[in-house]
Length: 79
Image 1: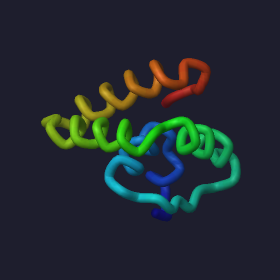
Image 2 (image 1 turned 90 degrees about the horizontal axis):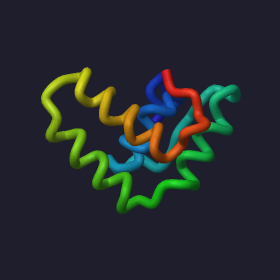
Image 3 (image 1 turned 60 degrees about the vertical axis):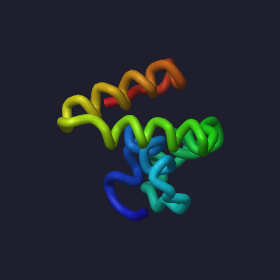
Image 4 (image 1 turned 60 degrees about the horizontal axis):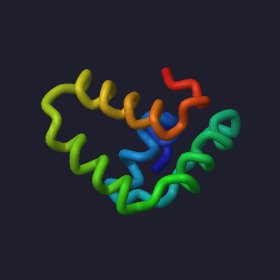
């Protein structure tokens, strides 16, 4: 995936869980994206994506993904 969403750390686990395995990102977010990809098992990402697909609103999705990221990567700043 190429574009803004590919470089959004909040979306990385979701995109992995949806089956994407190639990301084109700007250099300044590359270390964060690599850390997320290397730290998350596909099975876990798939489970997260399945949960997201059951949510009703964009706000619910963002809140859930923020919670996931805060638990897994407490030191990573999430917008």
